[in-house]
Length: 478
Image (cartoon, rainbow, N blue to C red; front, top):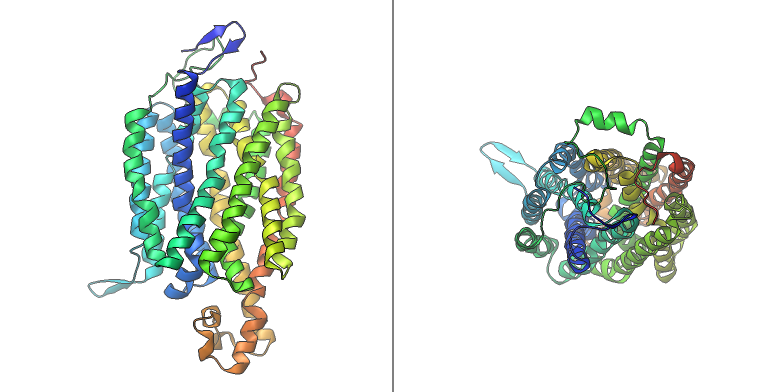
């Protein structure tokens, strides 16, 4: 079904006010998605030493442990979104991931008969549950936005929706950081997880399922959802989709890795508390990033009619500009200057979020919109989210072990968690000196290496720009 109030002007489903409400509801859910997802990174400085985790294990929890099922389950859920009731799907998934977030706060060592399961494995299972629930958020949400908003308005609408990434991270820091300092990290999981069940119910009661394909141009043939094989076949004819996916994957690899360890880096390098890192540094960085996400989406929308390639080259330039600011933030000894560097880097880099969804929706026909988003997220999340945090954690541990060895201490005589402020007093003077040399420096080096990889992401988006004129199919000049 399509709707048009004028020959060359397609309007979205419902009234303007109702579309605004629906977009607000979807954005709120996306914010919750990233609050629940990002909370582990916020409470990391307290959780890691309490549970005795290595940086590699923490990287596995924040990355691959979450992303594996998130990406695998995303494909069948997206197929359902292409033919089933999208509002019902999102309702069930919001309730599921909210409950699993609460269970993360209960993670501890458990014994079943003669088998003891460590706290790490219990927390990993809870994170897998969160990932399964969150897999049902973005594909149906993007499909709903595509039917509620006409092509000429869709980029800006998706830009608003994409702000959920940075706003969710901001609220995870504001709420999680304060609750962790005031109570403990377990309470933080309860506080952010429980409201999700109520929000899921309100969403189902107030958001309507729009006719599928409502904003497609007049005369567009309606079709049933296609198989994964057919969707992939259509995508193989769109090089811009794959260049964009490569750029988004590298950006996710860097972004998720850095955000997962940013609180830990700030606590280790500058000696502040978990709450101080979250509230005074991470929250302003997330707010700046949210504003930047919206600003670049707005700019690309304004340039879209005359310069459709702006949806690719605007974020490409922003990603490149973020690199020097990140490197400065991770190497300066001044906490204020580090915060300023992180704020600027966050502001200029996040234009790729709106771009990845706009390009992903714009190069395919209505039949495979949700599937195209799922394919994009499968690659970007499995590689980017799955291995980004794990990469930083592993590199940090490698640098720590090698640094300890260079200072003449055997690896088995000193672990990173022994260098934590709550434990370091129990060490000899020599080992305390070694901790001072390698405890924070090893993670610092890993963060700098990761920041430099944003250059590769920038190049992929600039290459995407060269293909957009040929591959975009939903441009609707008015």
